[in-house]
Amino acid sequence: MPPLPQPLPAAPHPAADARSHEILASIRQAFAEKGFDGASMQDLARSAGMSVGNFYRYFPSKAAIVQAMCGYDLAEIQGEFAQIQTSDTPMVCLRDRILNHFSEESMKDGQLWAEITAAAIRKPEIGEAARQMEETIVSLLTAIFAHATRRPVEDARTRYEGQCQMLVMLVKAMATRTAQCGPASPALAAQVVAVIDGILAHISNDKAEG
Image 1 (cartoon, rainbow, N blue to C red):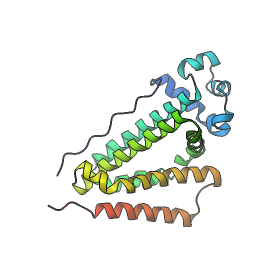
Image 2: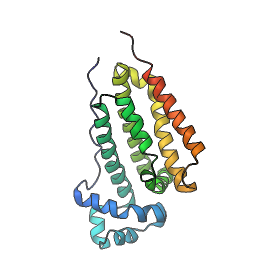
Image 3: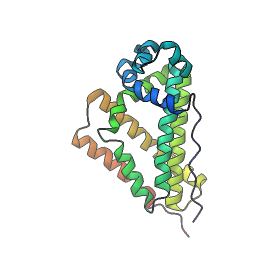
Image 4: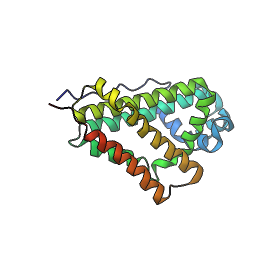
């Protein structure tokens, strides 16, 4: 069996310290409710309980805020994947983590990510941050699939890149849809779970010979 692939290092992002993390946590709701264009830096500073001047010391622009949010969320995701990789049943754990992202609590950020996705179309720097985040998640999924199928990472990337991208797309689409239309109906939720189970079952049964 090939050695267990290690998670990629956390993506660098501005103001990566405890205080900036607290600020981001305090402004997420305002950012989601008012939107990327509707939320002024004054609005966000007020939500954080800070003066505008002090707020700018941490985040000089709304693009910097989004980049930092992507960085912090990616760090949390990498922590999840590190636990999955060391599990005795990584594919089962991966399924549980994916479905957990469809929980009511996890879907609270749906509006925020809908706004970020829309902003990424108009703002190249935000689009790049979102692209890097998705690319890293695909790489983390590839590492798990390589381990589960006993394949080299390069081979797993070639074979399963489309499936990895589909899983990422499903999570993003469900979060965005929930923000726009409310929780998915049982019928839709069942269809999404069926697609996820089909992808994971196909990969689990695609082990390398020998």
